[in-house]
Image (cartoon, rainbow, N blue to C red; front, side, top):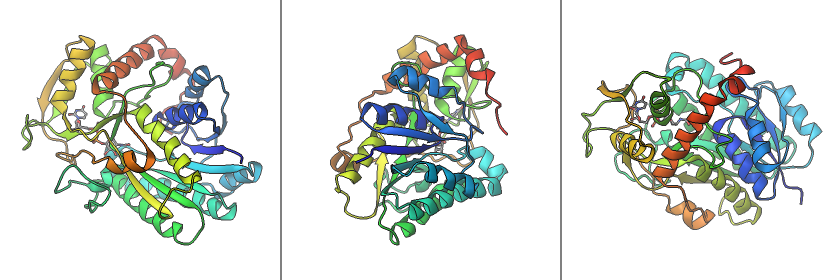
Length: 352
Ligand code: WQD
């Protein structure tokens, strides 16, 4: 059986790490990425790691004809892993319609192709953001979703509902993977996260402050009802997240699924506070971080971390990177970016 996987958003952070893992596990990969929020040069890093060149179709998935043409040209696609989406919580609050149109139109176009070309497997990049502010933690896949905290969060909740209903009407088998907080970089330090502009996420803010790109960072609040007053998150290494996608496909190919649409939490199962994450960074790297305690950030979930039993028992997934590994690889990647600044910024047009 052909093992060609179409990865959308494959020039992005989690997409590129997943392509590496798929290639290392015997799959062939093609990428679809319009590079509006990603740098095509990241595929050079993928090639250095795996020795394999990846074809990227620079196509906007919101254009149905262009998307359809990819499937006409590749009639042996076994599965799709769909990462391509806008993902900035803050930007989604400022431009909700752009988020609903981009994230949902692209998904619907892809699902139309799944139906038209009878693609057997579809894996969707979802997020713990669908849980909102949970009443109980850790959250399981059965924890009822709360109202999302942002239009970005709603696009993930709606995306899951669309796929759920779609899966009832076709033979395709689908999996929704709910990531907690993906951080770190591939151990080779040849690929990693490329934030656009000032990073909103914690770990890139830490590493950019540590390297001097940012003069100082803020901890968004230390007056929450948590053990040290700062928010709690479940930080998970991006390579552990990547491997879960390979395992999800293998699970479907082996017919182990019990329904046509299953959900899995991808987190370590351990909650870490923002201040603990900073302390771990400082201890691991020996770099003292320049931060102050600032006001709370609107929309922040106070505390969330995963119950990951289902992914462990059904997918055979076992996160293997520690928080120290996450901080160490994130820091090494930031140092590499400083040396290769021209390399990554030369072709990157930034936000369209
Ligand atoms: C984590 C904690 C901040 C920056 C979001 C999305 C999620 C996923 C990851 C896309 C919070 C605090 C942060 C800073 C800080 N997105 N923080 N100072 O908000 O948990 O998740 O990004 O895949 O879907 O919801 O991640 O890293 O932005 O914030 O104190 O400079 O770090 O307040 O408590 P978040 P985050």
